[in-house]
Image (cartoon, rainbow, N blue to C red):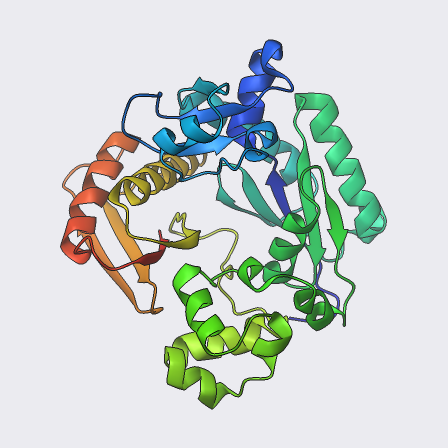
Length: 338
């Protein structure tokens, strides 16, 4: 990564819930929970910031959300509507960068390297982008600016909602040290507990550990990862060409999970994103790959090819669940799925 590289990570704030509030103004200012209906099994797909104040968060069982915020308005997932709004947002993003890397229905990386002559300094461009999305679509976005995708991703979460945060080149390590340990991508519940048991409770403490000490706790792959991210070094988890012959979508859970409902609902959302991008770019595929990373950072994948093109979310989701059953015993905690 060169010193001149500039990346935006742009994240739509509480996207599903914000679209529900946009389409129904009576919901503005009210706690909104998108996901399964009360009384039914299922999880929270998204929630408004008003609901988050009561402790509600995504991937939480709806039964728990009802207990925490019984007066919330519960809405079903309307993925086709969210995809419609996402397409409009991404079209705006595409006008600002020749290299747009959409990583989910509500977030993307923009490579802004060399665009200063067109738009001005990156912070000014970010403010302009935020204003255009708000005025055109009525949605708020948070933007993180950094010289790597990883740092930009961390920065976008720093000032949410409606945030804008710039990590100045050369201050990456200082910025990361200011974050709580759990804010580092890839530090889930199990990893956090093991670090705490080892006397590591802050990023500064983690940085003091040698690679060999981390290897002894987590193995070489996870040890190298933690050693890098504690210093603000991009571990390359978001690397990839903006244009390729494959379409992928993955997510790292905020904490390691073993609940089947949460994993299946996440895979459904990821399938929506992949099919959305296939349709958007007029692509077809007969082959799908499922990737699972476990709490110990070990990673497994399985690939299947169908005789007919995968044309719908339902067909991809069904195939993904079949592959999931082959590679996951239902007991091991999962860190990432894709």
